[in-house]
Amino acid sequence: MSEKIHLIYRRIPNRILERDDEVVADLGEVVIAKSRFEGMLAPLKVNGVEVIRNGYTMLYFAFIGENYDVLKVYDENGEFKGLYVDVLAYTKREGNTIEMLDLFLDIFVFPDGRAFLLDEDELEMALNYGVIDRDTFDFAYSVAREILERLKRGEFPPEVVWKY
Image (cartoon, rainbow, N blue to C red):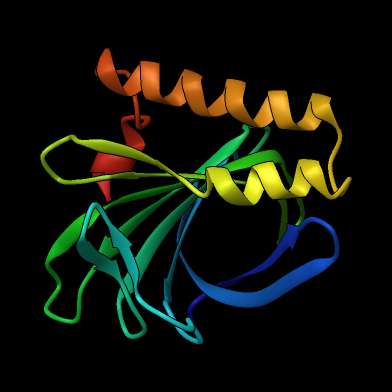
């Protein structure tokens, strides 16, 4: 029987997604697990291209102590669609449970390296409605900018992402 990891994915103000995924590799500071996209209300399009929809598979990389995770996205035929990066407030682990807090912003990286910052409107709305404070807003942008800079320099994603 394959090992499972329990994922608690929090979204401000109070959305919580919990699921148990199949562990591909547990490297301690990095946990790699496999899951499928299910329950999406609509496919995700980036720059006019459909990149994620129900039935697609993801290999996700949880980096303990980091402010992001990385999802390698594959379609039904196993074709690599790109990387989906969540900007997170934290990633922590206790035993077989990983908990992360999502900060709205996401980055999608196409296989050719083009990167797009997503959901800025959601972050803006969270600030305007008082769901997050200015510090959280600024922090989310600083993490996203850092990732985009590292992408340009070829320092992102971490090497382990290409090993699996």
